[in-house]
Length: 284
Image (tube, rainbow, N blue to C red; front, side, top):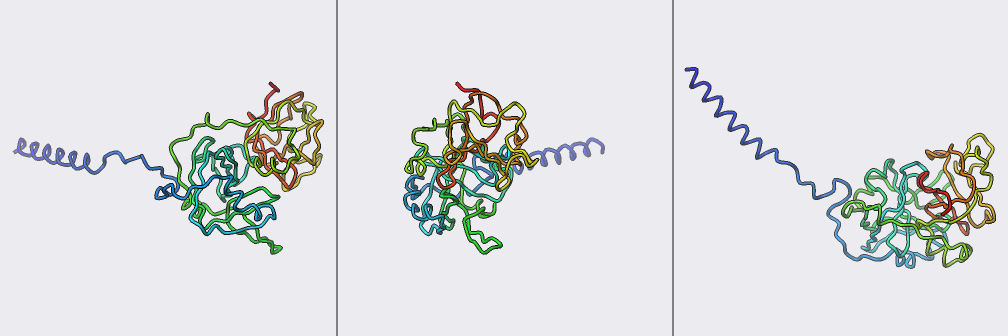
């Protein structure tokens, strides 16, 4: 009797193991769990072409819905990894760069530097703040002003697809051309790009002064401090740091430095957004 019982138990275990092997195979991981994997590459245009199509809208800080089925594709060059960039990522395809505004934290987790992204623009809005091009959705402030701002993560989820895995080495900054610092065409084509300002010195850097103090020693605009460079007009270029950045309280380095960051524009002024403390190094 015991022998028959053990044979029955063994048969049941074998059957269960067989079922489990069939039902619980490792899941397919070829498709990214982020974004809309149904998006296919069709009607792709360059960022330079996008800027040209919406040139008037951007120049006038306007806003316009994308009604055509068009797409852009590019590499992530900047994200929110150390808090100086907030609810935004920057995309560059080599012809130009654009801000994508997303109402979500921790974007660096799935949109690291070097990640290629395909974005379906239909239904989103193109606009600008200070003539810096942005992609997002309409937002109306308490004062009644309407402008392009952050889209919800649910809207964003439907409009992008990740391509491959991140390759940080594919993202290399251009050297900023100080000879063209006031050139309007240069502002238009290069705003939003990752670049490096070579061999400059931060005004006020004395070994203790920090990037974005909150003690009232520096005027904050939208919770950001603008730091000037010796020998360069603050009307032309500044280093802009959020008081919420992880490195806001770090002492600014003394001496000549190379500053890398996202070179946004506010009208005719370049505003450099460092992504991390690694973006500022002794001059080479």
